[in-house]
Image (tube, rainbow, N blue to C red; front, side):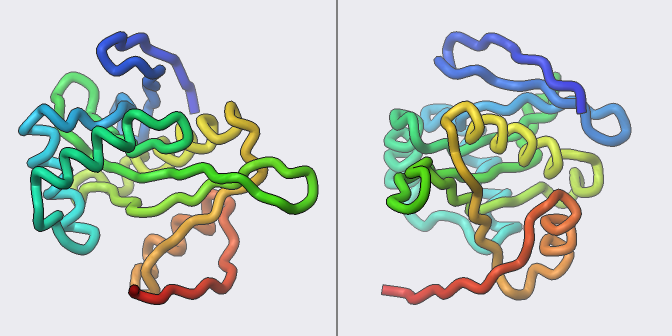
Length: 171
């Protein structure tokens, strides 16, 4: 995968350009909570994953909060030149208190838009977020995925993730 960094000062973060399958190019950036089109397209992606946010103002506040923290990244994958969001994922880095004390990263809410699947966007998003984690000395990533997402699980295994057992409880 050929990676080039692009400067986008209004995002105040490095963004990346990746080339996916079929020659598609993606730009990875933070979501803009003040851009109604970003919010609309993000909600469409979340609906494909599970469901849209119920409270749009709270969603914008959460995105702003996440964008302001160095240990969190709500990544938007955008098709270069079109402004169309084609995928998204969320990563959070937190401290670990075992071994060499390096932090670990949790990846959640991973989605590639239906029309962009099998075109390299998922692989490119993971390459970008893993590089982001490496820059922060992350030891390993934990990926959360719903039990019924069998195709996604095959993809995750193909890019090097191994299945482990985890538990979840709604509070």
